[in-house]
Length: 77
Image (cartoon, rainbow, N blue to C red; front, top):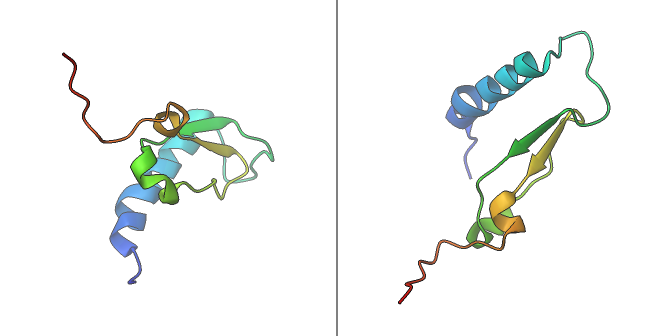
């Protein structure tokens, strides 16, 4: 598997920078407890992609998995 350079520089880093800005966190230091809850739209079909945050100040939440949602379309009627 190749390194995800574009994903890191174009998606992950800008999102983390904005989260730090919105939370009022500076470069001098970060709290050791979660101040940001980041909701990620990963469904039960992709549960293997669930990962805890690497930053102590950020907590990853997975509301679709918590609701046991899948990509499967259910027809009503």
